[in-house]
Image 1 (cartoon, rainbow, N blue to C red):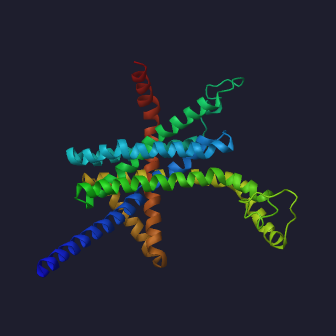
Image 2: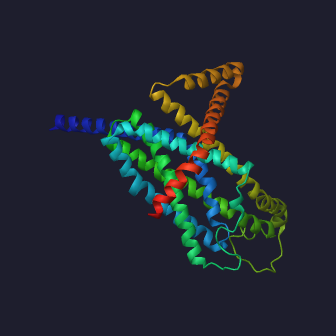
Image 3: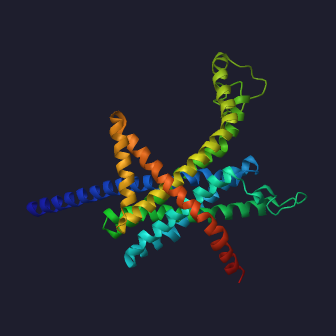
Length: 348
């Protein structure tokens, strides 16, 4: 009995080690896949705050929460099963679909760059709502949330496709693939919409801090106090800093959002371009990939103190150029071909 028990415990210990290794592998693969999806994640965080513009402050977080819940359902209920079925039934489709998503990223990034340089005339209108109309707040919220969730479906599909392509190369277990996809989906959703919540409430927090002359006594506004309470020594010592931070948030958030939008556009281009370059290499068209690698390696050798960072930056920059060129080619194709054809199909 004792020998059997020891053998059983040894088997359990072995299984525990395998499970721990699998969890470590899942965590490592999740981080790797999340990093590859960085361009889409940044764009998601940059796009979402515009859906709460124009609403009362007390509706901002509920709207973000509704969009986050819709995003989670997009990833776990629709895209995750579709990705797993694809990996089982037609794994050969993963790379073409990933390249299609990369092309879409290139188009979106190039379109945003084009729009920033030459704004479209139709974007200056009222969007179909006459100035004298007063849209119902609930209907407007439903439309905004619905539009945000539809946009998220596209971005989430790209994230899951990038994750699946990364995982399929290095993980053979079906259930581990499913776990990693779910982990990435939940993790990215929490990270993106948690960040979005902080962004949309940062200006309100700034206003509160800038107007608070009792930062210590009120615990930075968490405690409600009588307006007539005089400031103490700690309040006077802290007020200059907290009020300065508040004013910095109020004036800095519009600038931050513009920077985030630029970073999101750049990330879309370099991630999309990188996906296209890697996809071509899978099919044996590797000249462009070798050229980018050689230039990045040469730049790294030129600055050996920061070789890794320089090589990464050059790779990202050149991938971004590829993405921008491809996106510029796709803009007229989409505007004059695909979009009108899709509009006719939807009318039928």
